[in-house]
Image 1 (cartoon, rainbow, N blue to C red):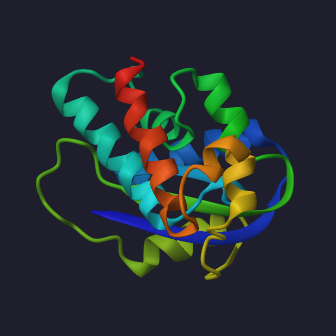
Image 2 (cartoon, helix red, strand yellow):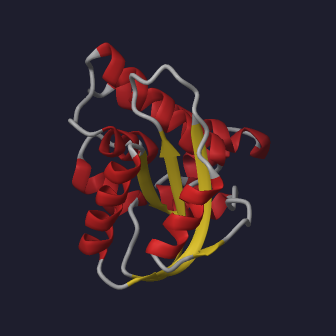
Length: 174
């Protein structure tokens, strides 16, 4: 079970936002990770990152002791937490945020996220829902770190595959 939630708002202090998000996650018995929406290419980008991270935990190949951090690493296509945070983590100030909400790697039940949890996330962090689709475009890919040379090698309809490839490569560079 994976839910993607788009939101808009202001983060005044990133560290306290992350601590509050971790506390909220623990209280709800969920794994929640927040991303800068401007570098997330699509829902598939995040679903693939979560799927790879869960598989890493199940296979014992995880690089972190937190599924949320593992998802962050995969979403960024990085193996170092600091690089991943800098690349796809939320920043201080007004921004678009995308949350990935899921259960733990070993949960077998496919319990869905109820709307009350989503309302509590928005209220807790003083955010508004932003149902705009993630901007799956060339600029998003550049912000993600994909070069013009890489972009020139494939047709535009395959751009999403570049992100998925970066996610899959994280397993290779472990």
